[in-house]
Image (cartoon, rainbow, N blue to C red; front, side, top):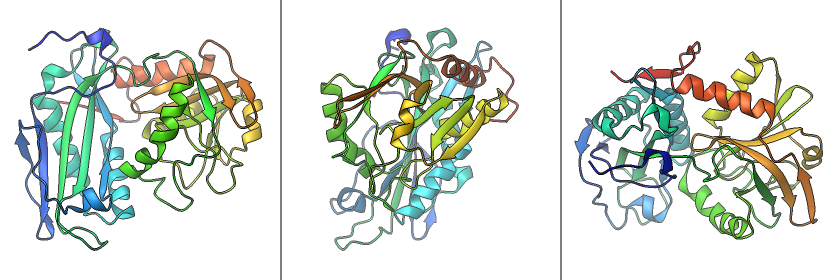
Length: 337
């Protein structure tokens, strides 16, 4: 095995040994297959290529001090993939088959799980695509589900250090009543142009406002948004937001730690009232936010150069559960045997 610099991995693709595949044909899912190929053979008229019949997930496995590997909340990812499948009319993969594929992919690539002290993790990418050929706009009759994995460092290269977000009203991530709540590639394609522009201007991501009225906070492209004020954890409620499993977990922990939790519409003006602001998701866990710049009105909302006290507590608590340093009283992790 090549020498891996575990501490400086970054967040990017890396080959590992095996992936797991499963085909849907003739109205049913087949058996799980293990492959060492990084290639797939796909029909040129597959619906994934023409009509966006594609959904994916992202989750992580962590190696604890005890040497055990823990996978975090994969049942929730399985259910979210089913929701995405419903949203764009793909065959639904059973939750148990999804979880078994993840277990096998992690076990078969065990040597790529970063060591405990590295602060890195094994990123797991389940993918579901329409492979059946169609030239009319309609669902495929065949699908391919895959799980591949790779070791990764933090999503934002800064790690747990505050960065700046930017609001640019001329860009939307998803249409009202569209596919924003599903984890499908089209939403990410829609955010690439504005995301690139934001990075060129020195921001880590775009903070999108709701697409219909531009009055409420939505999400940060690759992550959910949260703000903390008056001992309350506030996160936007919207039909265009991908329901983040990390955010869902943070809401439970915030309540346990004595914060009130409010999931509701968050008016743009409320940015001025938060003591702390963060972006959260599987890849980033929590990315504290230093400031939000409203590019249309040349206006800054500032939150400080250091991560806020609650963001730190929540970040450390969630990581402690994921790595097995604290009891898992919510049965969020599964140990890979």
